[in-house]
Amino acid sequence: MSGPSSDTDQSEARPAPAKALWGVGRGIGDIWQGLGTNGAASGTSGARLRAFLYGWAAMALIVGSVNVINVVTILHEQPQDGVAGPIVWEGSSWLTFVLFDWIAWLALTLVPPLGRPRWRVPLVHGAAAVAFSFCHVAGFLMVRKAVYWANGETYSFGAFGPHFLYELTKDVLGYALTVAAFVLARFVVEKSGAPTVAVPDNATYTIRDGNRILRVPMADILAVSSAGNYVEFALRDGRKPLMRSPLSALEAELAPHGFVRTHRSWLVNAMQMTALTPEGSGDYTVELGTLSVPLSRRFPEALAKLRAG
Image (cartoon, rainbow, N blue to C red):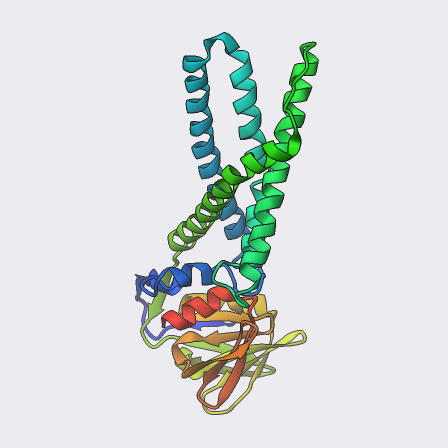
């Protein structure tokens, strides 16, 4: 079996620095960077799902609390309306609000507020806020009309236009809070997911290059690239041995040793990076001495880790 080994039997396990995950200490901009700068979803699908669910649950609780307060207020100020009416009104508003939270998540994934180009931010999020409000209002109207119809009554909302504009002013705030909740949830997920990195003394990696077996110090592996059914190691001394293995398997093995996925075809040794150069449109070039490796905008977490050092 190929894989990492050590000349000692014991290794020191240290938690990875929190700043390497989101660039903590670099300002709020790096939190947005963690969501991606080009519209690509960042992180693994599991992390994205947890972030979405945490943000969604937070907003469901917050909005639900506001709706409960509204019901209590209506019952106190307008007792003649009874209990059922306020519950249907506020309950339908809560239901459709949380049902369409995904609109804010989608817009945030496509265009982070600090993403580039800047002109896309107000355009996309403005349109998303209007779409969110329209779905919210149209949704709770349908629910209310259905409930009233089921009870042999008729629900009247009045002229849609003026009421929609009134609801829109409130929904814009709700949209902004939803975006903030998703960003905070993403930050929490990434921070709590900081791995425990085993850093053994004199760590080496065993490469099976055909019939040869090479035992190479981890620090001498600059990068690993996909080459069909093989992977190619770029070593400090210029050698490029091949080993039959999928890149995904190497990613899992080498991640605890500081290697990050910067491209669908590349892993780099973050500790050996000598320069990071932007190429436009969110892409970068990672320089490891004389070796240049692409960093795709589709891997924003790798960028955050490399920038954090």
